[in-house]
Image (cartoon, rainbow, N blue to C red; front, side, top):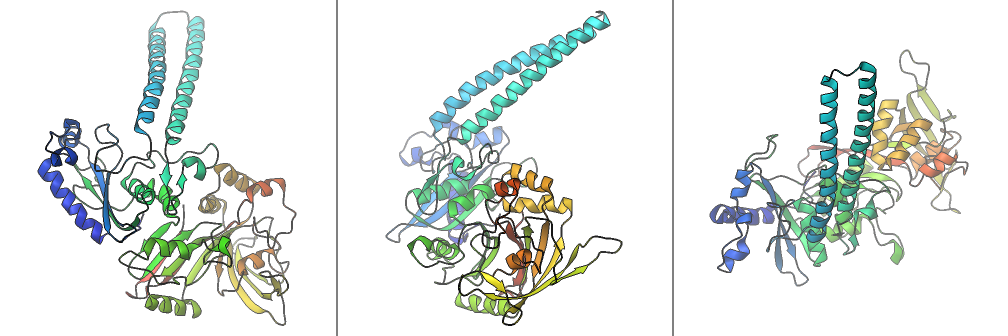
Length: 505
């Protein structure tokens, strides 16, 4: 994952923290500052005795008066201690966690002892001289008991994990408090350890206190980890597996890249690209981006939007922090120098309309790829609906390719729908296509999919161009528009480097 904020100011504070860790050999700075003996459990020696390191993070913020505030955090627990004075608190209640672990560990330990006893009985029986028939029957009975006990232990462990995650609470960019229940489908769990890293702890605390983050950095301290991926005093961005899951919910945006000139995000379905008319439509990518960056070192122009995605479409957007970058990127879009690709899940099997050209792969009898050309315009009496018009319409051109089954299984994950819904769509063989728009007409991909001169099959979840004849399974799956911009390529407005981004799960 790319660091969501400029790191310069925070790194200066990190170097200062490293010096204190080296000198005092403890993280109990509060005791030292008050002329007390530091807690021995908070000694740096603990890291070396157990041959493990730990991540530390710094977040530089501004308060309502414009004064800098510095927050610091460590990942997870330090020698089984969640909370240390001077460091931000964890996202869960420490006492509730300890009690839950105590109770569940006791039950799991008893089950493990029972399983071990049965394994010993099984071993003795296997080595015995008993008659084969009697021996086999006894072994089958033991295996059955072992299977039941192991399943019971697994269920208990899963329930314990769910109960732990239910303890987590975190604050988001707009000051609201959320839990994992608010962002997960029923029965799903976040990645193990999610919420224990420095970044979510720091940002949640900043938003709880009403502070505005402007710089963040994290470093590893202690012995090199077993996989040799983390080294003493080296800086690392937030992790993909855990931070990549929770940070978009805390920040309000999934930030894939940012520098002094541009920001690339993976927009969620249901969020406007730019504000609409009315109080209820102010929330958008651009308003959230301005909130996060207008006070940061890179700043943000009032209108950073360069292009848009429909509210219900998810995927990649590039935005500009400066007027120069905005102008440069806008010209690239106007001149067709930006490459974009989409995944679309269609509602029904595709039909080849008059506007579709088919290219057949060598040796294949099935249409696998081609292009669609249709002329359409705005339906002025039914905005923003687009209609086919051979006379007054402007031509929209889209290249298309039907994905293979294996490609479809990977592509479907981009939509971040429940696993059960993913499986149902794959089982139903809903067509999943890769679209490359060569023009940028409004609702181009949606119209090319749904119109009878195109594929005569609306994109699943498209209420605007839907035929209204969904199958029961499709109705269940179509809780969002199944259109996702997964690839974006352009030239960086300042460095002139080719930039490529993929929004894949």
